[in-house]
Image (cartoon, rainbow, N blue to C red; front, side):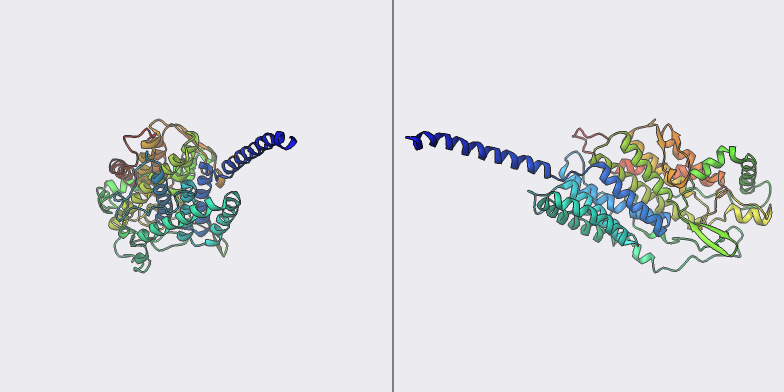
Length: 458
């Protein structure tokens, strides 16, 4: 009698216990799902920037390092999100990435970050610095959900390998074995190495790098600079004298000079030589491309962009920056124009020094101007015009925040900063920013990253 009475009660308790176990298991699975946030991605971008500063990559090479990892991450997320379109067959030579084998356990956001980190590691010198960053994250993710982590890691590395194979065909390795730039000392219009380090011209063969979107390195070839002439009535000499006069005017203001502050804010010279007595050393900074990557982070955070929106912004901007460097360097070593410092010291004032240290490559057109024009166009296409922001990118280097009402306003300031710095003539900055904006417009029109039938925020 007692056993028959207790049997329903025992059965009820069993089902209650089973239900509780199932609920706990479900909650546990939800709790253990690995969450990848926009801040995780910002941290990965910041880490490669930090390593690039340490390793001292030139501005063109740095732009390549930013582009490929972002593209890999974007391609993985585009596989999951119908609102975004793959860049396969849009970027020169890029084919569709492989499909994931384990679609049950994969976390596409995690796979995207794994691919980003892996390609970062392949592209820099100090691999151990990326490995420490990677391993600490791997340990955390594996402890949260081993099955999901392994499936996602395997796919991320598979895509990274696919992108790396494509990347290795962009002629970069071939340019490493090409001859150094040969200086023509007999032609007074041609670029000469400048003090204090008198470095050789960097990346003279960068126009041979395969572009991402533009048809060729010369597609946005600017008009030539004013013809070289030291006649005082010539346009060239007037521009040379303008650099000298502006420099003297703004430095006479001392610490109150807004123009000097602008020049220093946009300096972005990854290697500034400092000489003290018999000792020469370098102070390290970010490149101009890295500055605009920092602005991309600022805009993404301000708009509270989702992970896929954040990766989209980094990818589009880094592609524009990379193609801008290819376009600009194509012109630099075509026109091969001498820097203001060389001519001013020789013909006007042998004790004159520019506000900024002259970088080691020809003058025309201005790299900052071309890159800033292209980056501003890319960012405006994503976040809109009249996007006000506070730029704290240079705070880490001891410089105050500067505020802008739009990306184009920031680009204009970046361009004119090179004249204030005494390292560019007016033509280089004014024509350069037009060159960059034309290139940026082309990339915006040609790249289809947002699915027009979706509700994705552009």
